[in-house]
Length: 180
Image 1 (cartoon, one colour):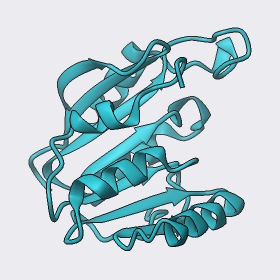
Image 2: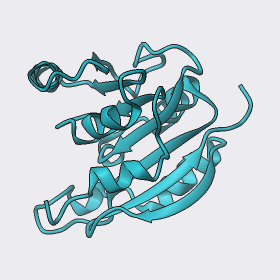
Image 3: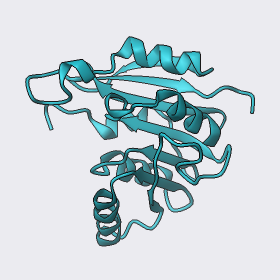
Image 4: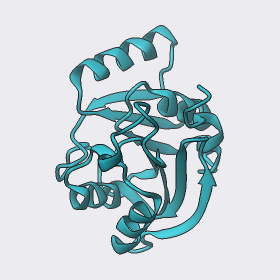
């Protein structure tokens, strides 16, 4: 995974602890969801959300195979209002890893993140810093760090810090607006 982001190191940036609830939007292979599930322990809950039904089926299989009982795999569309089916202001942290370059309706994504996060909860954004000759998105699809920062700050989030997310990725930690 030398060219990829490092889920364990990146998840540490959220300060997760026992009992927290986390949503991983666009869970894909599940690296972030499984890492977060370990961090929040038996009393916590992680919602691995993906729009691709084959990905959802695969993640459910992996969770069963690994006996991970605090991971709930959810089919959902993060670009739709209430597309995650999660309750309003019920989540302590959201992870968005490698999905911004695929999102067509960013305003709906930010609305859904805001809707489910508790006031002052954390958001971790990890995405490709560029196009790397076939690894990652095509150059015209790259969602720059500056654009990601502007997107979430315009939606009312507060930037906490930028993080080194891997050799080809950027990372930003935000807090959700403190009003509901």
